[in-house]
Image (cartoon, rainbow, N blue to C red):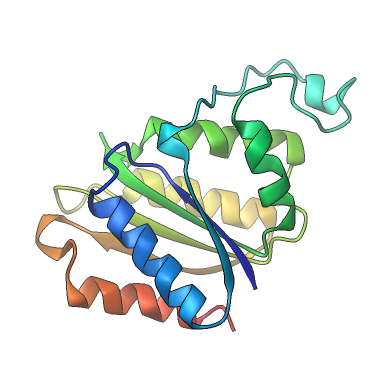
Length: 172
């Protein structure tokens, strides 16, 4: 399976990056092709709601930024993993921009499965991000393979690694 992981934490060696990397390693070990993109360090602007993509653009976004590198990856992805820290009860702005820019595609063409990896300092702060994710998955009509959350005492642990491995096993 062709898997695309979008990692949306500005902390290159932080907890979210660790979760994304653990997913990548497990998926590759299981024989999948994986591309992990650190979207937090890309120049990706938010959607301008100009509707160019649904008119003259024939599906292409008018903005020419680092999102142009993601569109071909999204078009070929059979599984999409979103990995984000929770900043004030929702996913980070760094991952929100690419999520919203998928609007021009409506849904990534070959996508069949998704997963969500979230980290935070506190427990009980995931509802906003999970609600957004579930809404997107429902709209796309794809299979949600699961969600792994990791609060401060669960980060970079064998237990969290095990929960990530369980998600990878659902790709078969």
